[in-house]
Length: 183
Image: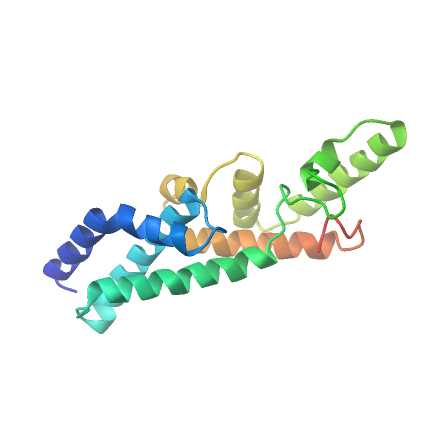
């Protein structure tokens, strides 16, 4: 990979970054500004690694827009499999899984919530340390993948993968609970 190729790619993303994010936001209402920014960043990182293997890209804008579309589709597929604590419960208008855990209106509900919190805590404790760290940071500390990537010096894709594996593991450990909580 030549320095000219890297400079060309960097200049393109610096100049067109906002335009690329707006393109993603127009393409789908399922993407928010933070997701659009993450997708653009991931495509740029992916292209940096591809340039070294494939050589220069002849039509960079076309290549980038196709890569953005593909990454957006991958994001949708991944998000369909992840159940977040902020996911609305089916049949419960405006109530999320986290709200269900925090609900303390009566004694039986409080006992049930304590059991749920205990089971969730035990399941989280069984996660591999790096998966646990990503899960806690994104679900409880409201950190974005971009923030974590910068803090931990890890690629966003790696963090997304760890979170996905953590969620799958939690779903396995908690599958006998209320089906509204775990798919």
